[in-house]
Length: 307
Length: 308
View 1 (spheres, rainbow over the protein chains, first blue to last red):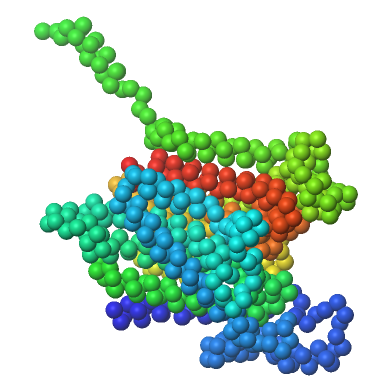
View 2: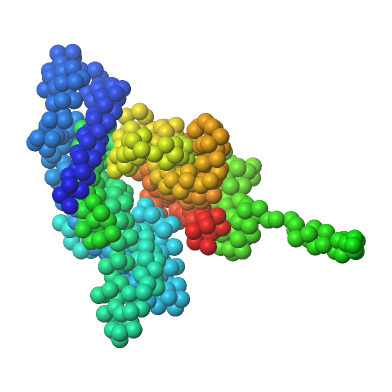
C-alpha cells in the first residue's frame, strides 16, 4: 500500500510542477506587459513598478522565484489588476463560496444519482426504470450552462420563488439554483453508471446465493451488492470532480455568487495573468490530490487491485 | 462405374448454393444500426442540422452582421420572429437577424466537434496504436505523458491560452485539438494490445514487414470500428466544451458566433421577454447533442462486438 501511494505521488508531484511551469511560460510569452497601457507610463515609474513585481529579473530567476514561492509558502504573488491585493487574498475570498457550492453539488449528485440508479436496477423495466433512464439521457444534454438559464427563467422570472443571483452569506435560497445547475448532469451520469453496474452485480452468483438463503432484498443490496456495484461510480468521481470545479466557473459568473469562477472570468477579461495562473494552479493541485485520494480509496476497497 | 452425371450436377448446384453472397462485417453493422430506431431518427436529424448549417444561409433574408438600428431597444416587440419581416427567428439585442446567426453558430459548433473528432481519430489512434504495438518502455513513457496531460485542468489552461494569445477561433481549435486525442489514445492502445497477439500480425512480423507498416496496414484498420464509435461520442463533448467557453464570452468572437455564445446572449436578455433569443439556439444545441449521443450509442451497438 505504501509503495502504491508513493508511486502515485511520484507522478503527481511532477505533474503539478509541469502545470506551474507551463502556466508561467505562457504568461511570460504573453505579448505586452501587465503595465502597458494606452497612456505609457514614464520610464522611471515603469522601471520602479517592474522592480517591485520582480519583472526586470531574467526569465530563469523569475520562474525560480515563482515556483519557490508557490511551493514553499503557497504564495501566488500580487494581482496585477487589483493593485493592493494579492492572489492569495482573492482566492481566500472566493474559494469558500466555490467550495460550499461544490460540496453540496457533490452531495446532491451522489445521493440522488446513486439512489436513482439503484432503484432503476432493482425495478428493471418498470416505469421507475424508464423514468430514471429518461432523466439520465435528458440531463446528459443539459450541461450547467444550459441548466442555469433554464432554472433562472423558471424559478426567478416566471415563478419568482428564488433570488436570481448573489450570495448573501450562503443562504439556502441562494444556494439551490447553483447547486442544481451544477449537479444535474453528474447526477445523471452517476445514475447511469450505478444502474448498469448494479444490474451486472445482481446477476452474479453470490447475489443468487444470498437470495437463496432467504435474505430480504434490502439486506442483499446493502450487504452484498453495494460494495462491488459502487466501484465504477468511485472511478467516475475523479472526472466528476474536475467537471464540477470547471463548471463552477460558469455557475459563479452566471449567478454572481462571488466564487473563484467569477474572479477567473473577470481576470480573463482584464488580462490579470497572476490571478488566472494562481487559480489554474490551485485547481490543478486540487484535481491531482483528489484523483490521488480516489485511486488510493479504490485500491483499498477493491481486493482485485494488486498494488 | 462412372458417377451419375445428374447427381454430380446436383452436388455442384448445392455447392454453388452454399456460396451465397456473404455479408461483410460492415453490411452486418449497417443492418444492426438501422434496426435501432432512435439512432436512425437521430441520423436523419443530424442530416437536417448539417443541411441547415450548410445551406441555411441561402434562405436568409438578412446578412448575419447587418445591424438594424431601428430595432435596437425595441427588440421585445419589434424583433419578434415572423415570416413577413424575413426574421424567421426574430432579431437579437443589436437588431441582427437571429436566423442567420443561428445558421452560423450551428455551423461553427459542428465544425468544432468535427475538428476535435478528426484530431482524436488521427493523432489518438496512431499514438495509441504505436504505444500498444511497441509496448515496453516506450509504452510506459507514452502513456505516462497521456496520464500527466489528463490530470491537468484543461479548461483553465485553455482559457489562459485564449487570453494570452488572443481570443480567436484558431486558438480554440488548437486547444480542442490538444485535449481531444487523449481518451482515444488510451482506447486505441487497449485494443492494440489484444490485436497484436493475433495470428495475422504474427505472420506479418514473421515475413519481415516493417513495424510502421504493420501498424498502418494491420492494426489501424482493425481499430476502426471502436475508433468511429468513440469519435462520434466525442463530437458532442467537444461541442459542449466549445459552447462552455463561448458561453463565458471567451471563445468565438463577434461578429462570428457559436451556439454557446448565442445561448449566453439569450440568457442575458430573457428577462426582457425575448425568449426566442435563447429558444432557437438552445433548440439546435440540444437536438445536435442528443442526435450525436444516440448515433454514437447506435454505432456502438452495431460495431462493438463486446456488447452483442
